[in-house]
Each structure stands twice: as structure tokens, then as C-alpha cells.
Length: 94
View 1 (cartoon, rainbow, N blue to C red):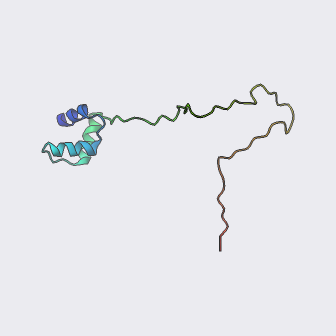
View 2: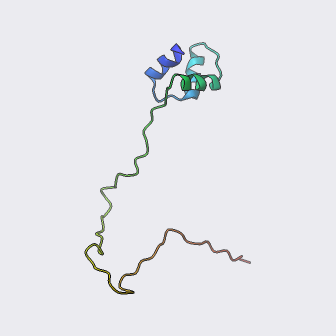
View 3: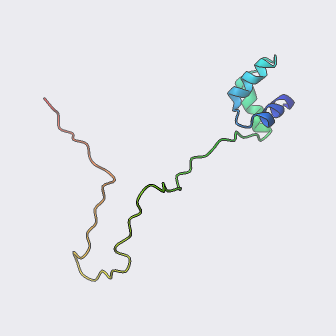
């Protein structure tokens, strides 16, 4: 556990597989499942950059919301469409 802790402090981005390889380089024969179990016991987690999906690309144009101050008081005044799903063509081509 001390060797795993030392490896994790030196390389916090190593997972159980890389720590197992590091331990083998140090001359210790150990199973990856045991390294994983000991990492879980020691509450060690791999640090890696998370996906940041909330940042907008500054090169993309920002379109204004045109219906913000519009009072919708009659049918067919405003139309909308949803293009998130397009059904595939299920006909067979012969």
C-alpha cells in the first residue's frame, strides 16, 4: 500500500493498470485486481481532465432569441419544429 501511495503521489493520473505496471518495474509481482482493491481501500482516485461541455466556442455565432418580448395571443402566430431525430429510411433497396 505504501508503494501504491508513493506511485499515486508521483503520478496521480495513473490507474490500476499503470500502477500495476509500475510495481512490476519496481520488482513486485501483483495482480491488477488487488491493486484496484487496495486503491479503493485507500480511497485513491485517478485525476484526469474532465470533459467541459458547457464552454461555448467563441468562434461560433450567438443567435438572438427573437420571441423574447413577443406576446403570443393567437393560433398559428408562432411555429416551431424539432429536428433532433430523423427516422431512417426503412424501405428496402432492390
